[in-house]
Image 1 (tube, rainbow, N blue to C red):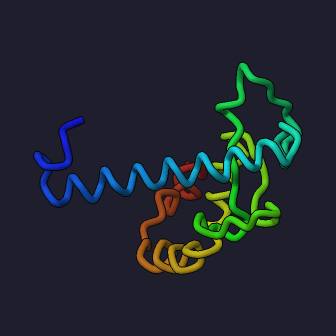
Image 2 (cartoon, helix red, strand yellow):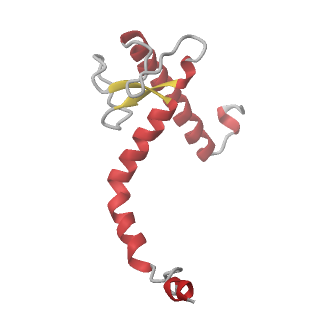
Length: 120
């Protein structure tokens, strides 16, 4: 990676954000892995040193900056369950508005004349 002096302001911001995110993740991830058994909190899949990279730390309140030392905002989830958890959260936050948009526009019914065709 280029030195800080040769980067644009935007590149510096992105690089700094990634650095801080990596440092933050190492801190809470390391703590959570020491605190909890290496088992997915949803599907109960067990992990060892060979596949530990597939076990993630999920923030229960979805705030990655809320990292209490007692681990009360964390749970260990496999990649799949973690993705599912975030999908459910996004659906809860934005789903109802999206459904209203999706249901408000379409009037075309591709099967409208099917009954008449079947009678022939």
